[in-house]
Length: 139
Image (cartoon, rainbow, N blue to C red):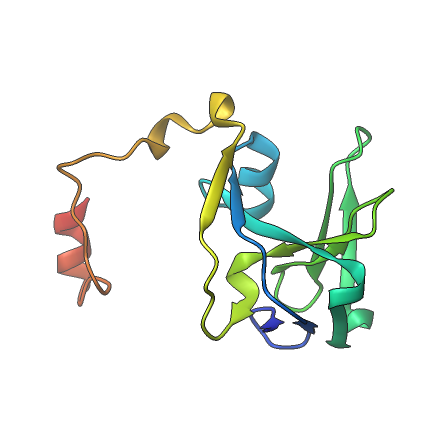
């Protein structure tokens, strides 16, 4: 399995079967990704390999220990080694190709954003709105 950031500068490989994914809904993950939840997995260090772009990676760490690594060119979150373990945290959105994994756990639902709740009457599109007018009608 291959993965890369948005601009393609940071690239990596994961060997072997990819474990199932989880989604974390905590406020820190929301801020780090700008989304409702962070979808990711953990892989053993021996199954993870950087291909290119390690020199482009920057880190931010909060005093409490939360750390996020990101591409200095495009800002995409990128994998990082979990302190005190032999594991790498790997953001699912960076993986290319077919992924047979599925979301097997949702974490920190107690701090999920109120706006994240699904609604049966929500508009669902296979693609995006075709024009600004279409977008205005959705909102």
